[in-house]
Image 1 (cartoon, rainbow, N blue to C red):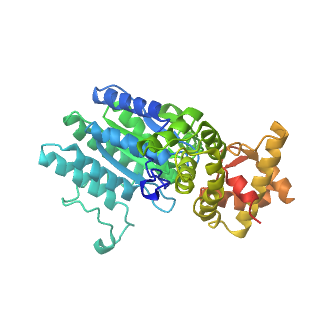
Image 2 (tube, rainbow, N blue to C red):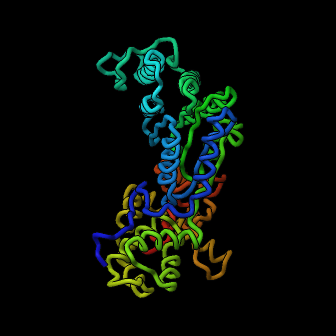
Image 3 (cartoon, rainbow, N blue to C red):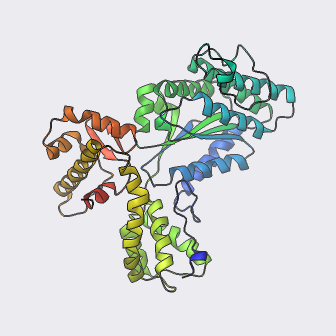
Length: 406
């Protein structure tokens, strides 16, 4: 079929043509926005899930909902090598601009506080030329959000931004991707700020997205975090939604899939949104005509898997050192053994965690000797530990990929 009209869009955070299976999360968020706008109490939101389930896509869709509701919004991606002040200041700057507050003096006051908050990112004694400038064309306001204690400063910043939003009957939402990569001190401050804002009833919320162990990261920071956030696990799509993600875009181009083709696609993608787009794109290009058949799927699978091996799996595997790659391969073998023991000959469900002791057994090593490799892989976001003594891949089908490598 014509590759120019190919409707599928595999890409990191790229919105698919059909956002299937996420209606519940979108409806819930609309309710949250309306409740906060009416002065009702609501919790901030945390989305969790593996790589490739569409967390970033959903995060962007929720932000679009907030924009349509005339809220001020700001978004950034957390990084292990960056503290919170700079990206949050930039997000706050954008959110305040979007509010459209009519009193310029009030806006300038809050922008000056944001600037002061951002400038505290510089080391003590740094010269002006060495300080990061947030691009805010008003003087910094001293004595507010500039104490140097991130928890105090963040509470003051959110309070002032929330007051500005309340003046115009709107709200502000901060969207944070890869939230598990925030510095522990910043996580603690963010929880404290959300707690304070919730108690004061100001219209500010945080919407975070991260890997499955993000709730554990938050809980380790503040014991009350499980009551502070509304958690939503984003998983692979059920069969009906997975079919819709394929059929909807195709029907716009007057193309159909046979029932057998849909069976075959669900078997190879397991309902993971990224895989649906990746396989769908290749299938469209290799299928000669509509309707797409199961044979077309089987012809496309090797090419799709080859592309995934380079871009989706391989790029992550290349980030690991030789010792870390050895650990990853042992994890894949341990996951397969664990699955066979529990399910007979059923294929491994690699969302399930495996004991670190099982990985050590595969390598013939003591678990303690493997801690450096395990910890490094967690920091690189290739594996996670949601429970003590257990680990799992952050990428679906990663174990299957590793077992195909020599």
